[in-house]
Length: 165
Image (cartoon, rainbow, N blue to C red; front, side):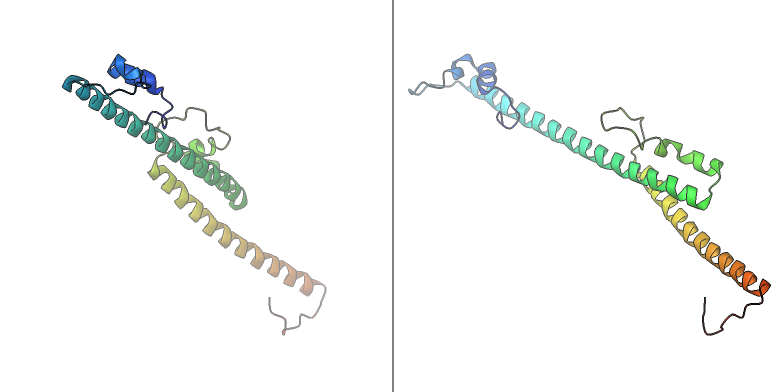
């Protein structure tokens, strides 16, 4: 455990009992019950420290993962808002998400910015905007087709009925 957590083994053993530092001794030694209890306590404390460090690593990994996901979603939101001409008042409720786009992973982020429910809310908005984008694109294509038909009519050009739009 000391190697895993980059702790000094001799120092750790010295904290349990100073005679443990003399590891080079070959002869056996008698260990009292109280020393064994302290050793068991130290092992338990090291296990707790290991668990705590693992939790910190996992929390940091989740934090980075959520931040990256929100940054990607924020970029998508901005792109889709632009394409769908979304009013600013609708965009404002997601300002906290779009402000995370340029945030580095070392910056302290306000509480709740990486909550699962917020990520889900942003994902729902992105889906809604993608659907809206598809509808607007269809609308735009139909409008351009009508404009083109009007141009053909205005110049008295015959439109071949075999060619469908």
